[in-house]
Image (cartoon, rainbow, N blue to C red; front, side):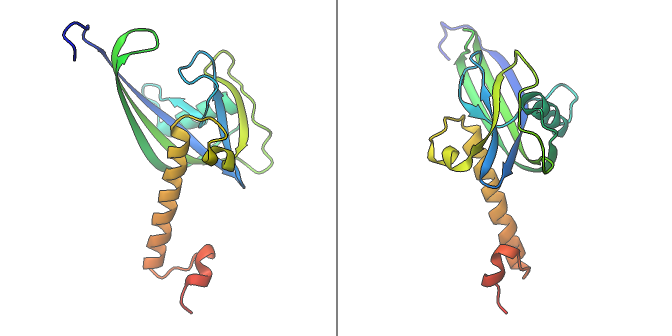
Length: 178
């Protein structure tokens, strides 16, 4: 660190998010102008409060951001981001974010998503075509493709494990020996 700069303020943030898919769509939330990624899309979720279980964070944050009652599934993975430098407010900080991504689901027939918490970091919630996300047509934060990769990796490992035990999965039925 440059000796002329002040000692950075150390800050750590734990956050929990959910990856919710239906058919060929992904539930995403759009970030407000007050954020560093204004207008970009992200997964529903946010900061874990002190003493709060990350799964409870997902339920709370997803409701505030989408108005939907989410059922939290398996932990898909984590993402760690480290930054040292000037924060958006100009404070010199050493920032470390750990983001947990959980699978999620909503009941069939759930209403369309809508933002409940006003004045927060979310301005819109929408089911977006996965093709728009993966092609880059929809501008999203790094967490979105990372979450999709976590799901893909987990699914691949699950299928590989099932095959190693000779378990026929519906999609693999034709590949299994008879």
